[in-house]
Image (tube, rainbow over all chains, first blue to last red; front, side, top):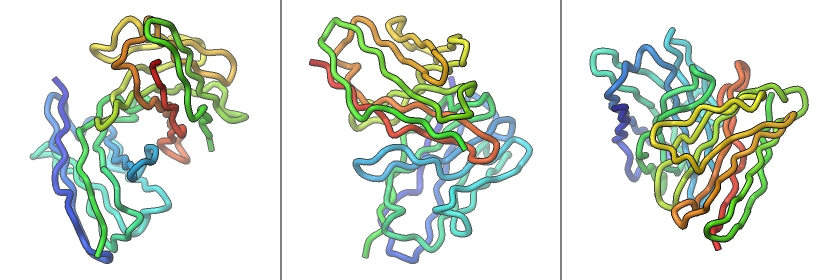
Amino acid sequence: EVQLVESGGGLIQPGGSLRLSCAASGFTVSSNYMSWVRQAPGKGLEWVSVIYSGGNTYYADSVKGRFTISRDNSKNTLYLQMNSLRAEDTAVYYCARGPDSLCIDYWGQGTLVTVSS
Amino acid sequence: QPVLTQSSSASASLGSSVKLTCTLSSGHSSYIIAWHQQQPGKAPRYLMKLEGSGIYNKGSGVPDRFSGSSSGADRYLTISNLQSEDEADYYCETWDSNTQVVFGGGTKLTVL
């Protein structure tokens, strides 16, 4: 059974850093595209970043230069390092498998990041 | 880059059927999309992948009441025999090598 479990969210001051983790089971992270998607309070889904199975990474313009996606193959875990956080980064962050089959096909339960002083 | 357009809201009565629409922008009418359901307070759930031909592949455990179809640039999600638990936000999603993952704005479905 495919499972994605995020952790690492919390309350952080503007300008601070946070690292999110996504522990995967039931499949191999390094063999799939893996994405981070966020949802601000009361808003829709916003794609944040993707790492391809080959290692290429891509970012939404809103986070480029501040966020870094990575993975640890030995731990079968996906990460999102978030630096220089802003109030507008406040959201629930979801880990997702895909879109190497041209779409996301599994979602984690999400972790809340609140950026506030 | 592709843009996905969805109506902001829809409503239908318990036990009836509803058809939600996701429209691909000009030049992208052949794109494959996915439909995702997000019930209140929960994470999104993958429902199906839908091709321009109308062929769709549902995720594990998705009820038979959910089906997909296509016409030109429009991608549809039809829910039959509406249940109270179908009240949710529905998002369409596509992928492009330049823009990566793109989501529609979502449709809030109310079951009357």
